[in-house]
Length: 326
Ligand SMILES: NC(=O)c1ccc[n+]([C@@H]2O[C@H](COP(=O)([O-])OP(=O)(O)OC[C@H]3O[C@@H](n4cnc5c(N)ncnc54)[C@H](O)[C@@H]3O)[C@@H](O)[C@H]2O)c1
Image 1: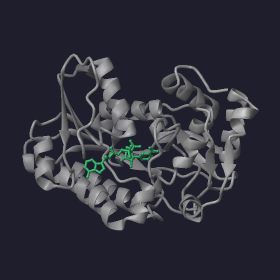
Image 2: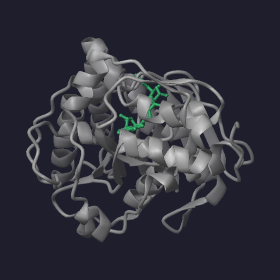
Image 3: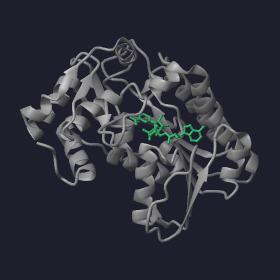
Image 4: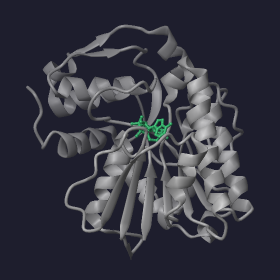
């Protein structure tokens, strides 16, 4: 089986590639080729038992998109994106990468003819906008309140239509905010949800830009990779006509996040969080939904953590080798 990952140098893409290399198979089928694409060549995971290609390409360039699918990957994980904060600050870039880039890739698949890969799209809960019901189901109206959410919603619609018409075999997964994000902060407006856990655990101060009553929906990077892999293996019949699914996660407030950090790492670590309100972040986050009803995804076998403590422990195990700074 041949697999393509776009956005493969990103946080989730790197972890997905490493997991595929480690397992050597997807949905019970052995992998013989993995193509990793990003705007600059992504690092190839070591010790792969099959061919791994790293491609530097702009997904919004139609020719590059066609070249990316020329090897007819059986499964495409489309993760390349400009994330929420940047898409809000730079409208042109957001539209170009998130809409035009996705469309270029969808069109490249269609143009290849007689080719119907499983196309897993990393969507977002930002496709929904306030006011919200108590718990948001998959089929709640898409009324995004950010450019990023609007761009993701547009691609969800295209993906559904391309699937309906048989141009490809799509599934969109609406990821929760993935925490704890390792490495350097990116420009996602949700970045602070990770920073307030990651930085204190590493002995550094972190800034909290919103009120600690903010409620949000989270899953770990390990769970995100699990969602993508699971989505790749579902049958068309299981997915049905509503192909964009809300993923499961943990719903908690920032205060509950901090309490979990304190339980696991102690007062000194939790004391490294500094409150510094930021109106742009607060405004973006205020329009985000917080509580979901992921019953379809759960019935389809998607799995996430069940507490924020578990999410912090995953980070300590996967990123810190079990060690935390005192
Ligand atoms: N991390 C989260 O909390 C979260 C939540 C919801 C949805 N998502 C979605 O999941 C996907 C992966 O998220 P992530 O956290 O790994 O993001 P990330 O920012 O770490 O990675 C995105 C990657 O896309 C690449 N990219 C940007 N423009 C490109 C272009 N023109 N051509 C090729 N590559 C390009 C970037 O270089 C980057 O490596 C994204 O689509 C994101 O919108 C993430």
